Image 1 (cartoon, helix red, strand yellow):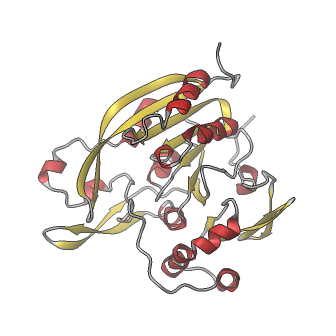
Image 2 (tube, rainbow, N blue to C red):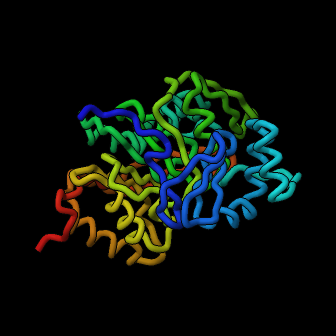
Length: 321
């Protein structure tokens, strides 16, 4: 059967009931057996569990996104009449203070000092893409998509990519940057102060990012040929439960790639997940101690190490033994 791009409603479901979503308006969705209503704000679907609570808790983030990216009057009236107004400014999330971080060409266009420029600026995402080689999945999923840097690179080798990001501002930023032809950003140089930089990028039209939660994903069918987890499993209390969800929505034989820090106060954080990886996946690639460069005006220049793992889901999706 010839592959066709799946529509948004063919991919997603209600994160609370796993029922299919229905379109009420081009920017509003509901589901049977569930009273929740899921909006699309700043071109970003919000499919969070307990979505009303999320929208109330994140009113600062959503208000800031509407102010920065714009939205039509109908959507603004719906949101602000239900959840009220918040006029105070909110800073960017601490791990993404520079617009465009993670996109190809980002590092090359910042004024990095010589001792950083001399390093090989190869990120864990680069190693994942290299390890997958000529694999061209039909539908990919980027968990913890952030501003969409890895989503962009996945979209260049996949037919279609969906990203999932819990922070609404980052998800909205991703949906703003992915189809853009260039990224314009500001960064802080300790010697020169604030500097502007811009770089061109390939516009992406086969990817979008959903505002959702990896602990309760808005997907219920085995649709994905490739799932990537970049710096997300270390942030959840129970990474094994996230892995169980991933196995539920992956096609048999699909690829899973993981890039995550390995430095924990709790030594057994990944123990159960590692057992599941061994039982359910055929390991393709693993490496420890990958140098990764991060830069922003609060943390300056930091090197830390990632653990990278890639495996193929066994067709029967059952433990060996």
